[in-house]
Length: 562
Image (cartoon, rainbow, N blue to C red):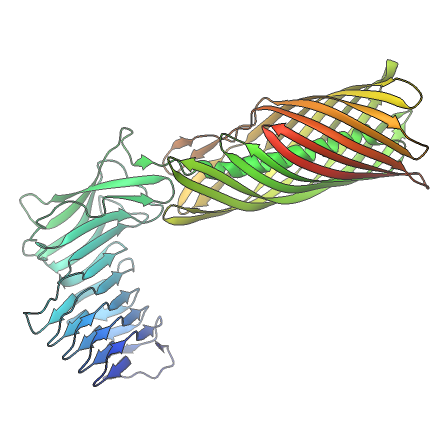
């Protein structure tokens, strides 16, 4: 590969060649001209051969000032010139001049590619050839392709392209923009036209887009006026269909018209639902955190330091599912006031997730990571007859990322969202005998994730605020085995009353189908409390879940009273 930079010392009349052979073939050579590297009258060749073929060579122009340039990706005198590529990504060009993807004197020139990739690229006075051969008995047309990936590009003329592909860019204005403006009308009789969207573009049904506009002469329209691309996905949420139209009467323009669906816009795809599954994962880690911190207010005795942590492997059933592996932790200080208790804590945690959706036999999988940090307070008030009330509030920030190999593209985003949580609990302790007791409890837990706008492959989405309202009933049977050891077993039932991850497609002004974890979960637990010296208590807990949430978690809690 030859890379031409600003300090390369290229002067007028220079001949730049990636690879050259007299008797053999010239294959796989590249010339790459960096931005602003040249200001000269030069000839540029990717690969050149006299006796052999010129194949799979490439010239890429990123910038520079060119005066009457001769630019040829692949050239052969006696052999073929096939499969060569000319990339025009920028630069200033002064004609007249010719540019060739493939050129030969005696051989064929097929399957060559020209890519026009720069918005407003001015090639006035420049003729662009897919293939050229002096021997007209040879094939100079088949498979030659020009890809127009930006708007308002100018050129003198285009020749010998079987395929013309137009990718409508983001920000195309149908009333004023055009894809390719030519000084001389092209002959497209045998050509095939494809029209699609670049990722993230937005158009309306019925929009009339100018693909080609010719200043001089009449366009010879394709015999086949069907759009060879058919329908093309734009971003991850829309499918556009285009019809080719002639410029009736004037024959100066070739149009593409956006077909309407029943909404008057593009066909909307279901894939963005997978983005909202990330919210379900965030909600799952918040629920685990809230269960941990609400339980701390039931465990804290006296003045002291307390800490709890839990690790979970959970499947959240959201009409599809999210597999979540997470850990939650909290550390705080507690103080006793006449047998009532209050505490403050900092919490943190994280995890990773995998999400899955089946869209009419098309599987979409997402994955990513979470981490969060927050502050909170907890209280416990003892009531007559061994009843108590517990409460708590916390707030923080959660950061998440998302990645998915969706159809035709990879979707990614990162987001940071605020969260708020509160709980209120009522419980009662029942002594059975000196070594056995039952604790009964009920809780209401409220969790809220703030809303966030994200951009994914050019499409904009609103991750709406999401609320979980969960009620929980449970009991725990405690048994004292000795002075320093208690064991317990319990069970609980919880009901999620909300738990819906809502979102909106801002680009196309449409709601996204919402995943939800509304429903019932049943849990069973086993644990042991160890009372050590120096007023330290350690609690080991193992829990299994079935229902809307299924899986296992295990945790350790510790207290040091002073």
